[in-house]
Image 1: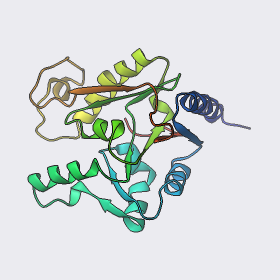
Image 2: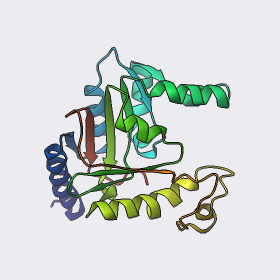
Image 3: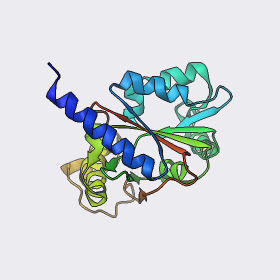
Length: 212
């Protein structure tokens, strides 16, 4: 007997893929995180330099381990100090392939992302030759307004817990306080309603819960 939850995830994921394709995204549906990682690798030419933004989703798929073995990479976590880390983040904006997730996706195929420094959103908008976005079905919401709400009220307060010494209200309360903290991770909110040029952003929807 088919698992009802998985059956629903399959239907929802494929519907969202169709709506993403209508908006110029190159979009795919995969049942599992492992399959998503394999699909992502198939989309990256061997000569590409690969970089990525901070993403629990991408890490959970095992994709980072694969690309580190198979491609030249820009890995900011290997930086010797804070200055080198910033420089590597700048270099990532001109990588060939940039990997990331999305904080939320609306059912009609719009991506919503929220950023502290803006490097992840910047790469999504312009710079790398292609961007591969991996999202679990848990990040799919009804409308773009719901997507913004999810990014601010669900993703950001959870992500805030990952950073020591952030000292934002949401890190202390677990709730978005619409703060103006100097260490806020909600400085940039980007809605990508269409992919231009067509196909540059490739979205892989996964029928599992991944990331925040």
